Image 1: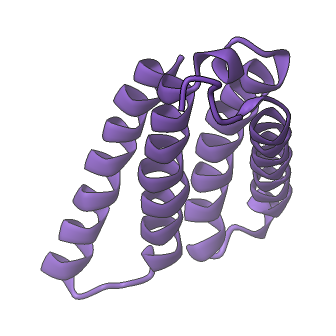
Image 2 (image 1 turned 180 degrees about the vertical axis):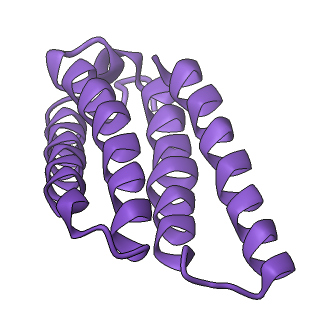
Length: 125
């Protein structure tokens, strides 16, 4: 699971950088919230979670890790697509943004539970 999350995070990184490039080329920074959230929650958070899952495979094997994986990777794209429409004035997409954001939060809480329950110092250290 760790390597899968790291690979997915690289996709978010490319998307975030492309949005940043587009904003700098057009001098329109309306998508700044999308750019920031994709880089933070997609690239950074998923890379770190992937590294932690890789270093602690007992954590990656839990139901909490699987819940985290799916909630984060369903919620983040939903939240970002919704947010794109919201920043362009389509208020009808606020619920999609909120639902996606809620899924990400629940995914992060699942990740926290997995870490707190399963990450321990090994007895060989």
